[in-house]
Image (cartoon, rainbow, N blue to C red):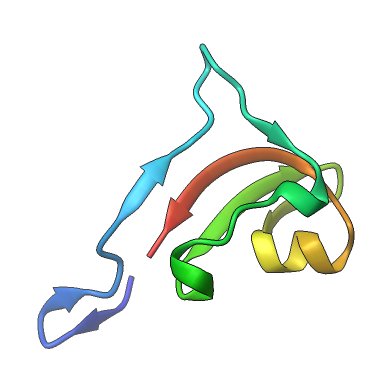
Length: 68
């Protein structure tokens, strides 16, 4: 983890897909977090990727969480 002046750089972490309700999206439906400031983590057939990497590779998958 990284800290700035004693405060964590990660201020928000929200789990999207849960065991009781899985959330799957296509590559065109991957949401943008805070207009690109945050990151979305997605599980794809090629492994765990950020939303930007998955969009670039045209891969969809299961949304894991959003971080900013």
